[in-house]
Length: 172
Ligand SMILES: NC(=O)c1ccc[n+]([C@@H]2O[C@H](COP(=O)([O-])OP(=O)(O)OC[C@H]3O[C@@H](n4cnc5c(N)ncnc54)[C@H](OP(=O)(O)O)[C@@H]3O)[C@@H](O)[C@H]2O)c1
Image 1 (tube, rainbow, N blue to C red):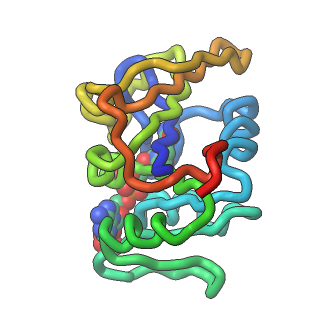
Image 2: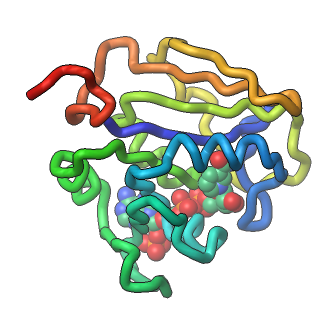
């Protein structure tokens, strides 16, 4: 399954000065646990902000220019179609982990959104998600992470399916 995972402020801010505009250990832990053992796909700017591969996951960096400095274990892909092709052959979920440009590019193939709602407005943020990005998705689960954070999981209402989920209980 192709899954978008994001933490978003009340004013739809997700980034400021090339970084996350907050630090919530509970959300970082939730992110690590949720994505563990799967693939994480990130845009070049998010790669620069993280600066090192996320352990225990297949790290994929998207870049058209390929002007990125990354160790050999990190996969570099040049377009969305290459990620979709990869997803078909992975027996794992593919998490789109940002940033805004990358979420927007994948918004028509994301089957599930996992959204941590950060209960603040971020002043002087410089990266936002479009307000209609979750349109067409239906809430399936809510989780409380503490620290005032709520996670909302939603699936595409029309049953968008790009590939079989590794979480699927059915046998092929
Ligand atoms: N709140 C959150 O959950 C969260 C999550 C992740 C990131 N962030 C924040 O978001 C900000 C970065 O976001 P951003 O929108 O500036 O950048 P981004 O999406 O991380 O990276 C954009 C770059 O990725 C490459 N790219 C994106 N889509 C592509 C595609 N379809 N094909 C090929 N390459 C593609 C391009 O690189 P080239 O120019 O090299 O071709 C593009 O310039 C940072 O502040 C970060 O901290 C927040």
